Image 1: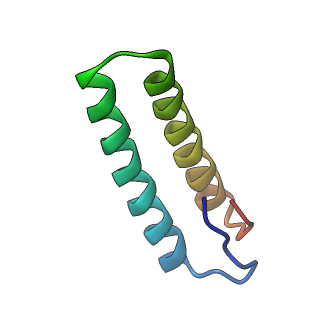
Image 2: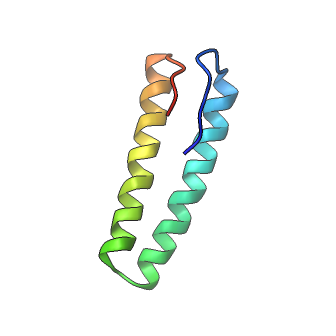
Image 3: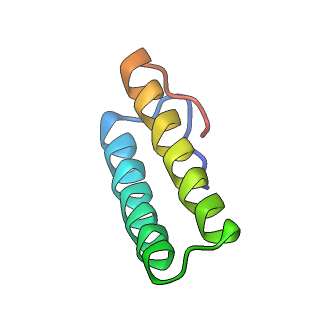
Length: 65
């Protein structure tokens, strides 16, 4: 998880989204390889992170994620 400043530009959110997307892809690959509670949990964490980023984008707020 990274920290964004309150004056973060949309570019920062785009970078955060890209990093979160890559983390989700990696977590999903691990889950496909072996379905475990830990792997499912990691996918859920990644999805929640993406939800927070999208909520920040939609709200126009630049808050720490």
